Structure formats: C-alpha cells, structure tokens
Length: 572
Picture 1 (cartoon, rainbow, N blue to C red):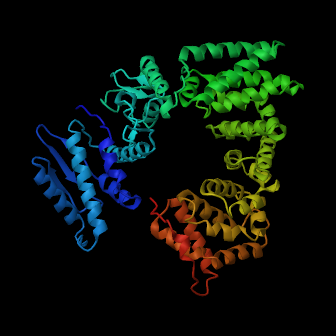
Picture 2: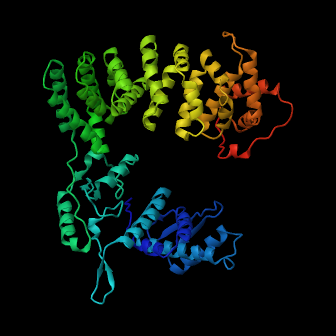
Picture 3: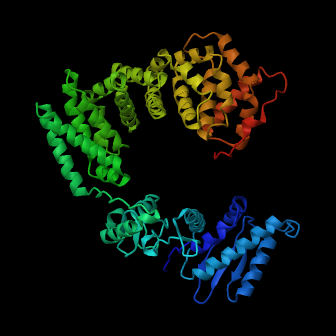
C-alpha cells in the first residue's frame, strides 16, 4: 500500500491562529486519530483522550462527517457542557475543522501508526513557526508578501529547505540529516514508499543541491542565505585505506619512523569520526577500534621509556571517538599489561583531556565480559586502576568522566572483596555518601551501585556505619532515583544492618544504624516496597530488614509523602 506524508501547510494555517494552550489540547486530540484507507471512502475511528469513546467518521458526504465529529466529541466528554465552557467548544471546533481539512486534502495519505499522526502534528507546528519567520517582501501596494520556498526544495520529512539532498533507490529525495535520523530510529524503510532502505542506499543529489544553491544566491537580497556545499561522506573503501596507512605508520613509529605521519593520520581518523555519526559507524564497521588499540599498544613501550606522549594521547582520543568498543579483540588489546599500564598512567598524570579519555577507555575495557574478573587476578594492577579511578571521582573533571569512573569502579569492586576493601581504604565511601545529597538520577544510580559493592567488604561497612549521613541519605533515595536505585538502597541498608560474623564489629554500631533507619522512615518504605512488588532477592532482603527494625519499633512513625512521588509498580 502506497503511503505518503502530506504537506503541513494547510494544518499550519489553522494552528497559527490558535494560542499555545488551545494548541496543546488540539494536538492531544489529533494524536489519537487513526486513518484507514478504503477504495471509495475514508473510515476514521475517533479515539480521543478518553478511551471509552470510539466512533466511525465517513467523509462522504461532508455533512455526515461533521455530525459524526460533533457526536464523537460529545460522547467522549459526557460530563462537559460546551455551552458553559466556550474554550472547550473552541478547541472542539478547531479540531474538527483541522481534521476535515487534513483528510480532504490528503486522500493519498495512509497510515495506521499513531506516531505518524503525532509526527504530522509536530510538522504542522514547525511549519507554522517557519512560516511566521520566513522572509517577507514588500509588494507594490506596500503589503508584505512571504517568500515561498519551492516545494521540490523541501525535505518530505522536515519540510525544511534541504541542505544536503540525497536520493533513495525509490526516487524520493530527502535531506541527509533528516533521513539518517529517521533510519537511526530503527525504521529501515523509505518514509514515503515504505520500501526497504539502508544508509548505504542513499546517493548525493548534486543536481538538486546546485539548483537550491542557485536559488539561494538569487534570493540573497531577500534574506536567504546560501547553503554551504556539504562534505563528502566517508566510504568503506576510503576508511579501509586510511586504517591501512595508520597501521603502517604506527609500526614505523615504533621503530623510529616519522611521528608526524602517524599523528597526521590519527588526527584525520578523529576528525572523520567526530564529523558525523555516519562516519563514526563507517569507521567502526571496518575495525577502526582494533587498529587504534594495536597502535596504542605498539606506541606504549616508547612512552614507558620516556617518549613523547602527544601521539599516544592522540591515538587514545581517536579511540574514544569510535566507542563503544563492540570489538572484543580491541578490548583484549587494551586490557593487556603493555597497554593498560600507560593507560592508567595517563589517567593519573596526563593532561585534562587525556585523563578524561583514559578513564572512558578504562571503563570500556572493564565493562567487557570477563575483563574485570581477569584484571582482579593481578591484585597490584587492580589496585593501581582503583587508585586512578578513585582520584577521578574525588577530584572530578567533568560529569562524563566521573560517571565512567564510577562504572569502572563498580565492575572491579563487585568481583573481589579485596578490591572493595581497597576502594574503602582510599576514602571513597564518604565521597559517595555526600555526593548522593544533590546528585542527579544518573549519577545517584551509579554512586549507589558503587556504594553497595564497596559495602560487601568489612572495611566499607565500618566506614559507612561511622558516617552520620549514610543511613539517612540511603533511605531518602528510596523511590526517588529508579527501580534499580531502590533495589540498591535496600541491598546497602541490608549490609549495614546485618551483623558481621567474620569481622569483630561493635554491636553498638549496628544497633545505631538500625535505629537511625527506623527513625528516618525506612520501615514504612520497606512495607510499601513489598506491597508494590520487587525482585525476589530484594524481597528477601527487605523482609529481613523489617524483622531487624521491628525489634526497635515502639510506635507508629510518620514519613513525608513526597518520598513516594513517581512510585511505579515494579515487576516481580
């Protein structure tokens, strides 16, 4: 079945006349409309924001259509009197007029996807905004006249002037940014014809691009800027040749060859990867990560001997640009002692950019399957990595590096209790507890994961029990971060509340943690968690915690209701 998204000019005319509040209500109604094409008429079931309403609309004749729309709106709002609410009646009429205009002017448009309906509404709004901001000319009578952009210069997806037109095998021309964004969402089809479409099928339409540029130049006096000539996208052949030259230059560099050639090629790879997502995918598909990791390892020996680190950090920066590392061979190469030692050295003593890139690379290596378990076999090397990561967390450079360091620390600490003890001895527990006070949800979840892993060691539990904010902050984070965050809080509280059988711990410290948890409302939250549901492991820990706290419960305490905002039912 042929499907085409129509122009939104007609819809834009209606939406322009509606204020912001009415427009939101109108778009909300349009999101629930499903168009189905039939041979001689169009059947439109109206599904409004009220799920109980579902009526059919036949647009032949138009009088029946209008009456059906009126009855649909009335039945979907049984408790609303439109005569007493002019705003509600206004929204209804505008929705009806817009719907009729859309259907009458788009008889070739067929879709059964609600997202497409919402997409049309967004396009109409965008078209209205651009229409208001479009260049206007002074007519002979002094009245401003809008400069119309030719229809074949507009992208069918964004309805904007195409800056880098590309043609699909179906013959439809799109703007490259719009069609690649469409394909990146997982829709491997042409938006107009629904035929199969891939990134590799797109061909630059130089003729259309030159015509558009000529039109821009001809209308420069009217406020139209000339679109720049787009860069040529990277091809697999070009990428493969570039990597071959890079591997050869890295090999020559190791044996005393020219450093400038290697640095030039590395900078070229980095620039191409950062230029566009398409280039990054192209480089990743031909094994760029593997080549860069090998080059990193080959140059590492020279850096260890006191060589120049500029090329070394340049290779690392290019490697970060092609992450995540989907290539297991590249991860194993970076995890080798030859490459990992200099990588940790850069994370501790490199430049600011080098330290950030090193931490991101360490996170990628440790996150790979089995890499953390392999690293902890060499305890001295694991301790060096932990020290570098803890330094990054305690003295943050940027949020991205801090979160990456937390992820890497978590993977290392959860595999070996000795590594967790090292993290606690490095003084990370107080830093994590204090960071939870005002951290965002993403950082809070990662900090809770690291804290729970560190509390698996006796040293970590001892430090946390001695911290006055540990228990109150943990309880406060329940139901406030995410489902995973809540489960991590329960696990951390369970570790703090349990007696350490293998470590000589004062009973007073454990009792103080239990009483503090009860005082700040942990009992009520744990009961609520069991009611809404959670995983079996979390349920067992919550039950044990309730039994511990019940011994110290003397009366019914209250808890702030704001702690339960955004609570979702968890799947067991």
